[in-house]
Length: 385
Image (cartoon, rainbow, N blue to C red; front, side, top):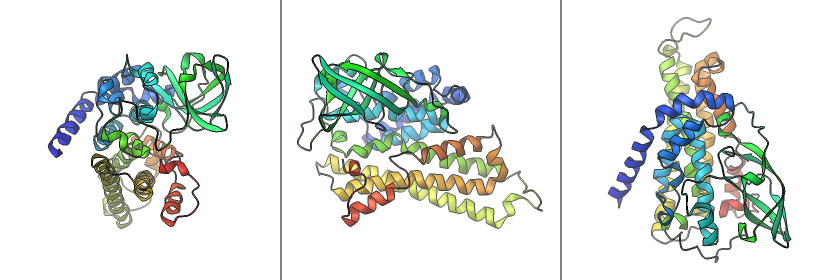
């Protein structure tokens, strides 16, 4: 089993090696355009990024969470915006495990690489009409919408939260994504203005006893839903490593302003750097260990308890928040170089500041984990799915 997993990961990383140059070359264009470059989008498809978490029965690769995370981390070293699209491609494919097989076939039966952009930020509203469901609202932060054929969103209907998929050609992209960081993710708002969809495209909330459709039978789909962390938390881990590498190169030549000696001789700078390396290595190890433990329980057919789910959530949150701390420490060493427009550290800092506020992994999720471990009232019940 271990040998097979090792071969799977090596094969995935080899595909990334073949496209990293293209991703890096297009990265600045994406920064300016606030969306991914067409060639970068094509490159991650060539590397089979859309198929990582798609069932093999639908033409996917159905890789382990550890392979997906390593793949994502390596793509992020070429371009963080391209790596973010690994989540964009694969999160809906995970969520579809308990959807009707007919809907799954509609989305990916003839094209495993089809992009269904998703966001759960602002639930839409739906009402039943004679020929289906009428959906209205504006969904925010729809990463990758410029390339998607469909959008997936929560919809409040009949007093319950459903999931709906809507053809993007029936929606209106707002093109209002203009942030300091992660600019190439193209996370625009999308307006859905009284769009009527077939009832098949609106899925009621899944229950624990809701059966998996016949495409989703492997252990990957027995993992808690937050296994999706493997598709985007590694972006932050990569940024921490990039910051460390940039500063390691910088200190060889940089001299602090107003002081004698080289930066390499400054005890405070040495302390910041050593602490950052320790934080990066330990949080990364914790994250990959949590992924492997979650995967192993699924392989053995064991149900994840609330505490197991909280452990996975803690590892993902901690990896992102610790990565942000690492980047801040490297800013303490680099000084004004961190704020020089065009320097790699400037981009790293802006991307990291954007990522650390993401709703699924922001600092408040530490408290959500404590609530599970203490048996207190949950402020975010979705973490236990």
